[in-house]
Length: 248
Image (cartoon, rainbow, N blue to C red; front, side):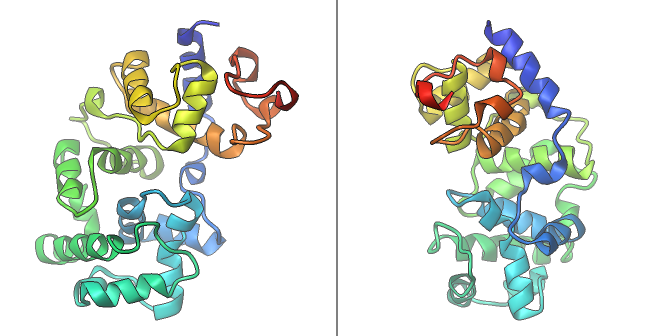
């Protein structure tokens, strides 16, 4: 099966994905908080580095439950050291625990000092270019995270960026993306650089659009061990590179 057909199947599957599949949580209340509190969404998005997604998207709920507040001012008024203590006290923590407090502090200060405490002003009536640039001013946030934030705002929260230069929005090549790209035969070696280049080659007008369906497949079925190939929507077109015969 050629790559074009696989891409078509991925894009078809993308239309079937529920928004919550893109921000899985450990508690139902955590998903509600993300949906209802735009600052909770922003915090989870900027902290999404190297930690299981269920933990990252639940962190805002853990903080609110433990401290009773979840507002930009609450975090902006605290020191980086205090924020580090808050994050370390949670049942689920960011992987980069020493960098995360600074990330949280800088996001909160930008929202309070530049957007009157309303995080949604970062993206409402703004260009996607400006939104990405604002996020990338925050410590630890690069093009991958900023593009992911824009994509989620579009796909999950109905924000329309009419200026979106989708050609410059790459996939965020985490372990799920790399693994699925390799098993699908999009790349010959499982590494992040190859995955990013492959997405640009396969969908040059909008590489990032491949992220959602690929990520969900990797998260739900195309696991490192014992993948559930028979449940995957691309089972019949996947060469299953690197998957042991007994696991197919």
